[in-house]
Image (cartoon, rainbow, N blue to C red; front, side, top):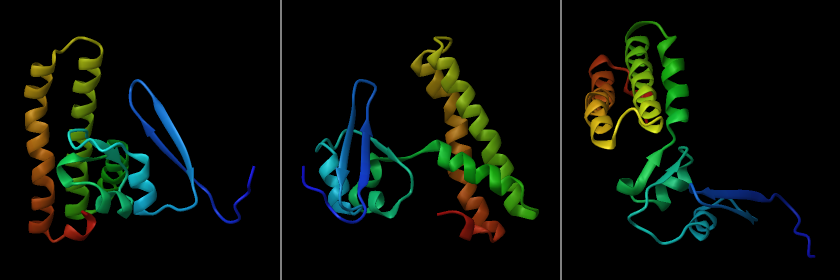
Length: 141
């Protein structure tokens, strides 16, 4: 087996049915695109590494909620407006997770979950606008 000098990157793509692992010599957009099937209807959930934003269309790109929640929790510890917006987002995250867990447990059907998530979606989408008005937009992005 040939050995490659330098760093190697382990790329992972998962679905409920299968996981794919690929070792690549780079961590660039081309390596990321090589990992994925061409399926524009599929939503790809990632962290916010810049390669993903360049390789995916916005409508098919979901950001990992755990990464967002970590940011919201940090912001909620700050003083002033940033802390207030962070507290709102952390509370909305708790509501989102509670509804998702109820759905997964069979206590909610998909339409009911969607209806309950509608105000959460509205609040989360409004938070960056509120941040801009409060002069803390640099924390969002």
